[in-house]
Amino acid sequence: MAGSRLEKFGTVFTRVRDLMRSGVVKQSDKPIWYDVYKTFPPMKDPLYVRPVAKRYGKKEEAVPDIFYREDEIRLSFFLPFCRFVEKYTEFESQGELEKQSLFEETGKALLAEGLGLRRRGIPAVASETRNPVLGMKLTDMLAEQQADAPGGTRVPGKEKPTQATLNPQ
Image (cartoon, rainbow, N blue to C red; front, side, top):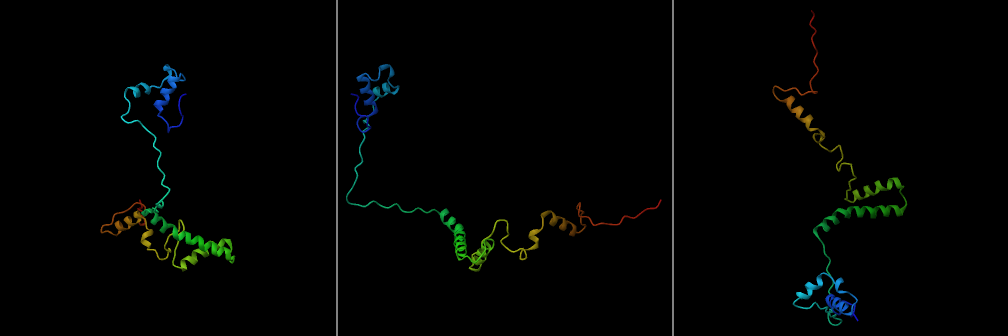
């Protein structure tokens, strides 16, 4: 017999050795590592040791929850949106509003509670309260500064129209 197939009893080396002794594996078919292992055996034989299960005494310690700083940031980001969903479903269950106005009314109700949400592509501040300088382009500002400077230089495309005099010949 070649021995047990379980890893618990014997090593791979002893199983291959026993298979070669019994004639199941021929000398010409032995693994490459067999001669090296036989020449240089390990200091300690690799043995399978079954871990002892403690079934008495202490309880298993519960693994504590792990929270990272990113989790707190993510929570503060998603919390207003979760509140929006709750308010939306509350208005929807009442059934007083139409589907088209439900989204806007939910936003207005949250704004009244002090929780403002922004939609994508819409500025956070109303356009009337924004400073008009913020809407100017850098090239326009530069052209205006050059025109206001003493001995103002002309900027192409921003010249003032003048009347041309006709010279009779």
